Length: 443
Image (cartoon, rainbow, N blue to C red):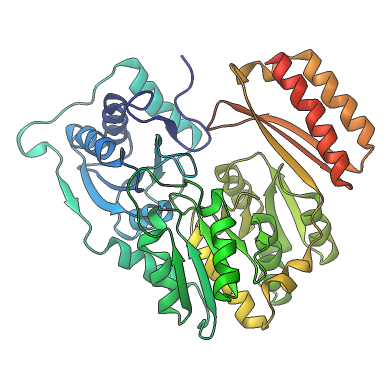
């Protein structure tokens, strides 16, 4: 049987791969295994997908069947659940979301009582519980779990995010694209509370429009809004708002690498960058590493996934880390990727320095990078394909240290990602195209 947990929880097509029955079993497992003692309490949040109510009902039923209470946050960003688990002294948190994926997908991911993603061994225990058919010692009578709403879930999270900014944003104009997702309940509130003028798009939802041609999956709408409104900054979230991408005042993209470079350079200048170290991933652009070397900052790399970034941050004592995709962790303020806090920190750097975002972005030169997602039947065969290994080795040799090749399976989708960086864009594209043909043929 394929492993249930990927790089960010359990995901699949809602009501097909991710069924109510599976959600119930995950809830029962979490209710039995996450509480340390006595009657447990788990914070439950969700994004705006139409399947969220169905899966929430099943997950909560499983928690209650195990004698665990569910504290319902409703539609909130993923990092809000991590925060609420800590603030309310709960035994953990559960988020029903498939992040940046289309509306037909959904997922369930868990946080520990301290707001961190679960360690591998605990995920493995939950998975073993689910797949073995084991049941909890189901209580009866007063021992059955109950559900209670958290009436101020949004207000608590927004207050926390606002408190991370050491100044006001008066005079700034921000264009905001919530991607028809959970950020619709929080990001505009936070920016307005700090004094910014905010213009918004896609801050409503139908349940089927999440991430559809908007938000961080498609920057064209927010880029157009910036140019039309004369905003200083454009912010685009994914469905559960644990990531963010930005556009500058001209409408040009500012990805996670550039956001981290801007913030790292500012923190370094203020002598507030812990250990003068930032953690990236194997996808982090070579230009980021070059920029950090120039200002005396060490870059640690890890595999893709904010859980691995966090693990490395904790190991080396770093307080800033993240991914090109916009998952950025400010460990001084939060325990997981947080799109709102990242957006606020970026806006703060602009306000504190008086510089435009396009000017700040010149801190790094971005090497041309081509990323192609190839749908495959069996991504597990990637590691055993000798032909593909030879092709990758040959392309790396041809680049001769002037670029990088990375071919890896997605942790959340049935695709293989082919990434090539090179000093020249046409070299990166032709190299990637050749490798894509090998992936298609072999896998």
